[in-house]
Length: 585
Image 1: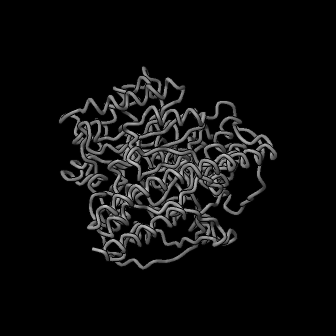
Image 2: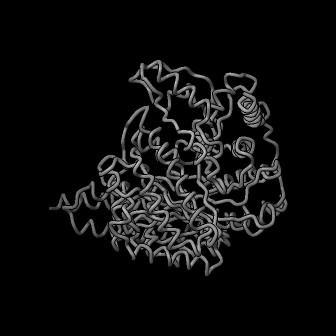
Image 3: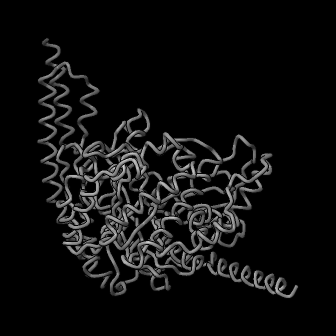
């Protein structure tokens, strides 16, 4: 009996220690503070990022197989204006050009993803390996290293091979774990001698929730209340298996690191003196970031997820919880499978308690949380409808990660802001402000003791933005998608970010203000050049349409995007001219 008693006492002590660690974060203190001038630690890594489907194009070239995004974007009504990533930035053909942009920015690292179906067209390694796909990534990796830019490689940024979706149901099926491991093993074999930073999954929250719960993203399934949880369960297992594969087969000779990139908006209690709001805010973060981070760092789902989903499942008359469970063996296998944690962060919400009924028809990931999300109308929102600029939330999130998960090594893998405008605008002053404020909050977090080792601006280029098509632009570089050559033009934020990188932070107020002024001055002349180029391009399109009076008005509208006020005048004049020509006929 003595050993059993000692075992029980030990478990109680472990439980107390875990609870204490989880309570270290102080929800009642939110000191926004003033701007902090200072520099980052020596060796801090500065980068920019992209993903395969969003930038590569060449969707059906050189033996690449179909991805779920190829199929989803080709379905009418799924993407704004029915746009696709078929050609996107044509990054597949512009490796040297794009690496030269990174060199101009003085980047230390570049984060990109490998397209699974470009390497393995069906997703099943034993079927066929596409050597041309391997050659493409070989060229990209080699060119980065020749320019002293470290590749940080994501294995899965949402483009599952379509065959695996059709045959097995994608991430709803446990078989994905082995297929993904085979694919990852191939990548380690082919590229691991040069790649030392691997990310298994990018933002699995979006894969699960938007792919299998709301259906906004590929594969577009709406399996409310179950689909997201099942997909996430398999993704976590797949991540752990890949980490163990690297650990046992490759780490000794390649000496690399394997992590995961988790996205997390910050949730701030509406009233930091109200316990229910504090609990709701913590629930928001646990259902978002903790859903994946807690199993990876502690071996199981957050207790609050198990409690809330379990209780609601019982109330709905279900025999078991809609949240799957890990066996004891799986818990120990998953725990600790993270050499570094990638954090993607863009925005913040205010959170308050809100109870949802537990009817079976109303069950969903969102109602399981029993909370409401609010925004402050004073927060700037230059682009995506979900993206408000709330810099202090970034520091709060980073400190939360520190206290919850034992201060892991962190690489910020995504942070940036979009714009949503008809007119071309290279003078992106709001993006300069966003980067300045968010990077400064990260610097404050490092002063707080958070172990942040690198930062990735999102993104290097304007690109295909999933269900929003090309209507939103996150890039430091503007891409003219209407031009078949997809030329890149630097926005003002390029110059500003370059100065941060070169100075490794913010030396003093006078210098930082000078950076901003010079960046805006430089972009004004670039704006004029781009506007002139767009007017020439638009005028050529108009002349073509004038010579073909049978061309429909709809074709004209879809082919000519109004980039400037000046171009709008040309367009209106052309429509009037077409009207006169048709009257003569």
